Length: 418
Ligand code: CAP
Ligand code: MG
Image 1 (cartoon, rainbow, N blue to C red):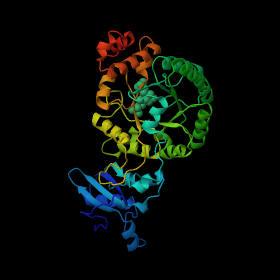
Image 2: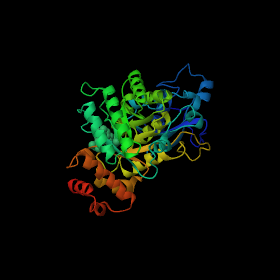
Image 3: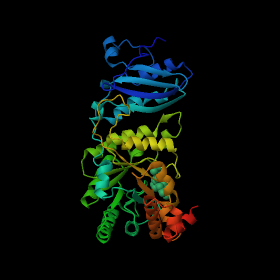
Image 4: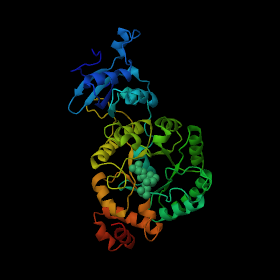
């Protein structure tokens, strides 16, 4: 097959083209399979078209400029007019759409999308980002200590709020709903907001510290907006969206409302398409897109906890979230205004893992403890203290074991979770 798209040696224009990198497995020769991908994701289809004019091909034709047969890597440059500015769903329909379903593809992994500044500028990015979140909490030089209320669901609104108070009071900064807790018959969303906000005011007065509660507003857009407005009305500051199931467009929608709320991104479900390294889309790219549409803080992995994610993967994601610009490619001359995102380490963490975690991921993050706090043998108050002590020890550069000699809650936790 003569491919109109294969252009070895072509130098892409990073300001005028979108560059997609795929790893492609196919029974066909790589160039031929890549041609199918390039066509299906842009102006073509499975056969030659009488309707495709030369001038359209010249203006909108994608260019396969890089093929690595050994690594099965393909890079395609797509002219920017193929994409609607400010429409996250449209670019995904093109680059992460039909191409995954084609019979000529055995496996296909979308590794990265590099976006020109003009495209980036058509999105708002985070309203707060790292700086904004830290400024709100007035915590500048240590990890933010978070906790997910456990059990995930099952407590009443009042029990949830009382538990939040207990752990805020004992060293936790951020308390959050779990991903499957929304508006339940035994814990109504509105009741939870009212109860929690009462306790939040009280604990802030007592401790003189700023605290946040992350309300899970996940749901259809109208429901989500109603709930976010309710949180705002009651003086709340952070709302959580399960961004895979809700869709990135819903994050974008909520961000566009400019409610002055911090958006917390939970990624439940991402492994449906990120886990198999040979197929789907990786977490790195999902995180980039979440940043683009306006997430302020995002679950990115722990390396040492219960969820998937190697040190290499998670550090690459966190770096990408924290960097001052959003172009990945050094050849991009323009920097975008899109703010950096605060990474969240969560999943299977307990005080005994904090040292290791910080060694790998640093201190510019939220460290979330669910079971590793509420599962403390002496209960949640002791658990909160132990988590705080573990973070304090790291910040004071004292080994956790040593610090535990004078901190009984930490000692119990270290003995319990060996
Ligand atoms: C953690 C958690 C979070 C995961 C999500 C849970 O609880 O609440 O949802 O961290 O994973 O339900 O598992 P534990 P990730 O602390 O009890 O494990 O952050 O990797 O997206
Ligand atoms: Mg959870």
